[in-house]
Length: 353
Ligand code: IPM
Ligand code: MG
Image (cartoon, rainbow, N blue to C red; front, side, top):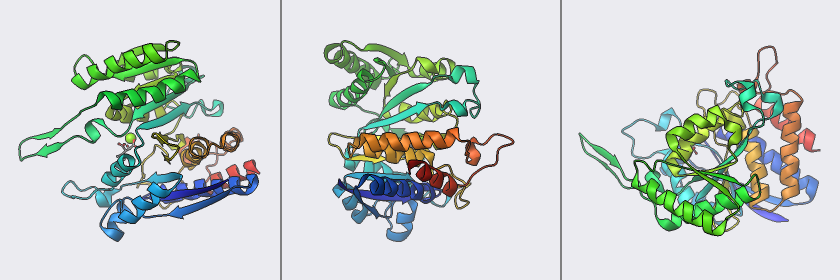
């Protein structure tokens, strides 16, 4: 098949890890007879430097016209002073909104060979396999903000249809898995959460009666996630709670650097990015873990290009590389030699071939 993929690598380690994901996509194309046109565009802090805009019009146009968007990471100390008006993060939020990608899928599973990479006890982690579905284009991230010298406010609002559509994505996903859905909210305090809970209850009971649905308060969810992570199958939650809980959940897999994400909307076009940030502290050293980016490319193959066989092949290659003992520093244990970003990407490609 032919596909057009916009590549917005961004800042910090973004370009380093994205380069490996791009090579993997090219290897998949060669091996399976596809034609992927991968087009780079400036985005994030680098785009502020070049064009005075974290999401320049030409980059947005490219992304809107592509079959999928592969994103690295954005931000860094250079663009984070509190008095700055333009921030890389604004570009990311706008891109998500413009693409209409309201459902952010963040799968977390533990590779057996990494059971000791986490700071959590191995016996708690055994068998962890869950997916977070984070609402991505609403809530407090997109509400009105005010600021005076003495007060500040951020508004959080959700509409019925915003909740319905993301809950449907999560419910469909759960139907193809262990049929367990946890909806996470703060309904004992927040009005938006009470609406969230009502809508979730109605949608799931009427459209997905076979699902086992549980509502959980976000504070309790934060605890249960590390107390009994195996019990989670699919979890759906609003934007801010999802942001926080998925960083927590990443520790179940051993490292933030391992985790991919897919952001989906109504059509097949999606936005794919590792869940880690731009990690300015290690940028430029060639030691970042590219697995989150490579697994994001696998999700791109699956969800936007409907290439399930190719997606599974990339995932199997990553799994084999980890099983073979190759480790970037974030997952290396004492006594093992740590590999570079490049070596990790090359090993995945070798495995694919
Ligand atoms: C994420 C990130 C972003 C978010 C930042 C960079 C704006 O933390 O994708 O989880 O908060 O959504
Ligand atoms: Mg985050």
